[in-house]
Structure formats: C-alpha cells, structure tokens
Amino acid sequence: MKIFSYATILWFVIFTCVSRATADGDDDECELPPAQQDIEWSKMTGVWYEILNVRTPSDELVPCFQIRDIRSTSNGISYMFKDTGRNTNVTIDAIKQNSGGFVYNQEHVGNWMNYLKDEIKPSQEPSPELLEESLDTFFDEFRYFTDYENYAISLLCTKKGKKLYWIASRTNSPNAITILKIFNKLIKVKKGWNNVPLYFSGCVDFENNE
Image (cartoon, rainbow, N blue to C red; front, side, top):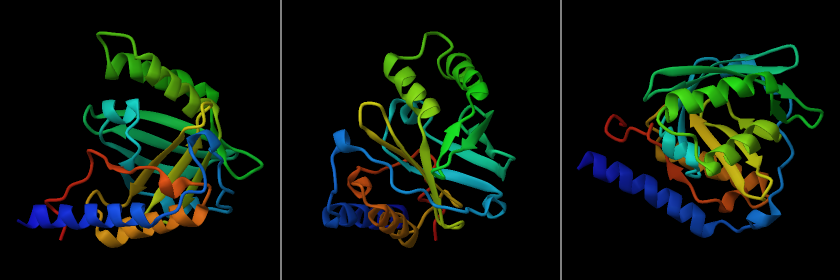
C-alpha cells in the first residue's frame, strides 16, 4: 500500500504539472534556453541518479545510470557515466562554450560508441535511431541547470528539432517536492521545455522512499 500510494502521489504531481503548464513551442521550434552561468562544480561531487527522461532509444537500452565524480577542468567538466545494470563506466569530458553551454569532447566519442557496440548490443549493430541520437548528443551543444541538491538537468535540441533532456537527482527515491522543483525549473527556462512528457527512469525506487 505504501508503494502504491507514493507512486500515485508522484504521478498525480507530474500529470497536474503537465496539464497546468503552457507550451511556448513545439518540437520543430526547439530552442535552448540561456545557460546557467557560474555553476560551482565543487558542489556537484558525489553520485547523481537519473530519475526522469523523455524515453529515447538510449533511455530504453540503459534504463538506469548514474553520474559520478563531476568536476571542473581547464576547459569544461569531466564525469563518470555509470551504467548500473551492466556495472560499466565511461569517462566523458565536455568543453564549455562562450554561451555557457557545453559540447562533448570529441576524443571521447569513440569511448561512447565502443560502449554502445561492445556493452549494450554485442550481438548486433546499434539501431539507426540510437546512432542518430548519439550523434546529436555528442556533436550538439547542451545546457546544464542545477540547484546542487534536488536536480541536475541537461537540455539538448536535436537537428530535427526534438527536445531531449536527462534529469538526475541526489536520490533515486525522489519525493513530490523534488518533482515539483524540477517542473518549476522547466517552466522557468521557458522555450516549451515544460511541455515535454516526462517518464520515470529505471533508477527510481518507490519502495524505499519515506
């Protein structure tokens, strides 16, 4: 009963927020909001659990991942991507742009593609949709937003105008307050990002939430 009640509350919060939100644009009008400036990366240490996504091909293949050891570098940031289901780690660097956004270090694209082929689907090549998403993710700029405690949000526009985002939290058992803070942030950044459907990731643990 506890699990059902908590899940019901979270979904009610999400559906209420979606129904009340007003869209500023459709996918074919995807526009990145101004980047959050002067993020204090020293406050981002520790483990972040993906809790919400837009259910892309990579989200379906990797239902749960963690972001670990985020740190600043001389030209951007670096972190460890951990596929929790396969216990596989991939180091990824991103280079800061003049806009305040980031573009992934192209030297690390090979690491990611090898991960897709060797760890995710060793018996077959990645699907065209997955490859397209990976190319968009690694060659296009993304914007990062965080309050250091409740959410770390990564936003990206694909070449076809689709809005992509991945949302992580300090806990894999987010409460209703955390979900509301995430929605409030998406509404605040505007550009229609509050109108993108949200899905819980495979990391979310309802049972252990108090």
